[in-house]
Image 1 (cartoon, rainbow, N blue to C red):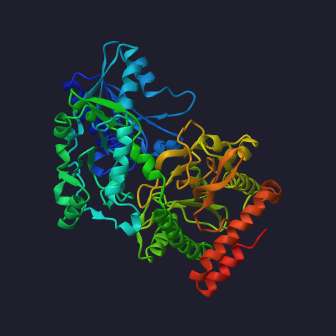
Image 2 (image 1 turned 90 degrees about the vertical axis):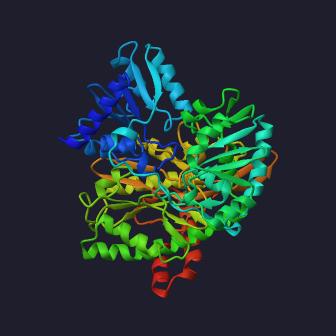
Image 3 (image 1 turned 180 degrees about the horizontal axis):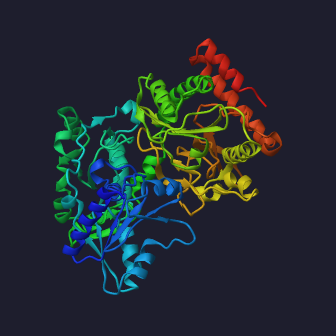
Length: 593
């Protein structure tokens, strides 16, 4: 048994007894609804031992449970062994929701606690509504981990830096003017920006407070006449302080945000209920009413300007050069023997690092060989680090942060002999990827309407994948960016020219293999007709797609033509930056089929 985890759970139960709580919900987020959170907010990981990026823990007097989605079922099952936590497979037909389980296992009058600083307004409202049906009260409490977590990490204190206008394409002053126009149109006297990437984009600054995301911990309050940044002053040097003042931004300490909310003298304040933490609402001046709406900054940020698009293309060029150099190295190294999954990550990161604009990874590299690739978000560790063999597939999902843009790419790479099943599965996934890549669609289309294009060739074989097909990508920011997505469930944000979005269908068979092929795409104008405006997707990613596993009769003539054209474009674009041997290699692997 894992006594450390059990001791931590007992400390939480003592906190619950002191507060008259019958259960406590521990989410994976921070006060800013971040996907990747700083160490000081990894409370769910600390209490359960499960380190996946998604999951929610629930502790009662005699039970400890962890809900996580299909990406992490296999990984969570391993990490929870011996902890006393029970895995709840979120999304499975026989798995109740958190609130359904609580209603079935707690008595009327029970009280459930949650830390309101790390749980959104929308989530707490939904939970309260569902629990109240059974006479159960949801209560926003103080942070229990402030007292029970010994040696808890401190708030990150990385120094922030300005991103020059030559990379941003729009000044903070102009961004604030655009934001204020939107606020006026929505009848809001101000907006509370809580998302770290929105604050970073709005201020044209970046930081290092969160792994993989060049953001900094801060809030930002914008009104018609004032913009105030709440950030630890020790993180802001004199040059940045002067820059912010010149853009019309004043500074206050990070913890002063609660006082500012209580003293806010506007009639209304806009906040995004599914992203803004509950404590913002609880601390808002009672004379002010909240305007619940999507953050205007999300859409402003999602539509890249010409300078940002040029930066993306430069970043993709750097990434493509590194990928080709790595691919040329890979198979001979596998045949020589001894190359591990971690070695793949180390070598590729080293090759990226040769570029002066490289600033680090955009997420933890997924280098998964064979059956490990069936674990959707697999990450090798020293204890679980497969040696690559000259057969089967390596699934490589990786990305980098460059000063001009953020990259995200997946390739499924054959290392030698393949089975018929592997070749067919690869071809069906590739056909779905190409079907989406070839899409032409009218203005007003959302990602949900396009999702079936990527899945149809798997569905026809009675197969599917449970993750989304595509997500937005930030500009030297978070690799996962909204509000637009391509997925089966309804995502109403319309795709617009200037948006970046990934195209990444996959297929995962436990104990056998996993396949995913991903490019980052740019939404752009296609044509005008009597039926209106139409858009298309331009691939930004510059990396050859391996043709050796392809079964031509399954892929189809149109998809083969697209694949050949894409690989030819990659070869033409990258060749001038390669040496003779690398260029010859690239020409060989991009020959048309």
